[in-house]
Amino acid sequence: MYALFQTIDLALSIFTWILIGSAIFSWLYAFNVINSSNRFVAALGQFLYNVTEPVLRPIRRFMPDLGGIDISPIIVLLIIFFLRSFLWNSVYPLVA
Image (cartoon, rainbow, N blue to C red; front, side, top):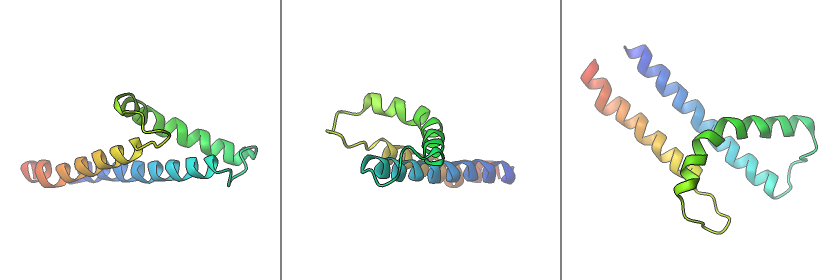
């Protein structure tokens, strides 16, 4: 059972880093720091978009318009933090 909880925790941790990478990539892209015509950069951006957008899109629908500021990644990070804490502090002690 411990292995299952560790695997879920690892998946949430990896998604956290992908989400942070996607946010940094979007800032670099928006401020034209990276070359968007580079094939590697375009492929990396498409990968990050495809992985994070299904999670971010439903949250963006409920968020008010903040004038170009997207706080949906912060909300997802808070949800992931809550899930990881809930998993280890509430669920795991009941099962173990």
